[in-house]
Length: 217
Image (cartoon, rainbow, N blue to C red; front, top):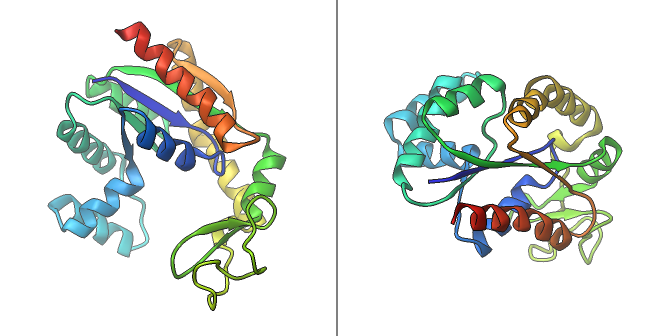
């Protein structure tokens, strides 16, 4: 098993690029957010524990996240895996290494802060079907309303309000940016400028994966 890590600030497009890689290439996407939801819905022992923690407004501990990631990796033995949302801290990166995981490459999606703020503050969500729009890049046909749920007004998530965005970026710089240095020292980090057309960004990200696959083979 080889593991790829997709990393970048909030709004860099990790979810979008991860989904495209999962759809088009032989790789299993492992998102910690998705895994948490899966265990909660299945009411596993870990899921019940996580649900209780979240109900109290607390953060899920590194130990629980590591257990969730380890369980998921065990399920997909033999497949290549793309990690999205983990590790977020150097401590988590150390813990991942402790599992004996072989990291092939870390793909860093780099976006200027000003572009990130424009991208995130312009996002709008349909509360009914959960489709996401952007007031500039992908606006709905009728301003402020979902194309599919016509009577439903689009909303802006609290996390996409400018004050919240700067807070999220500050947390990223403090906790997650050092993970890049951790993997750069190991020679395992490649940077992709994640601005412009989604397909152009995908082509650059996919080329890193395919080049590494050819080296492994």
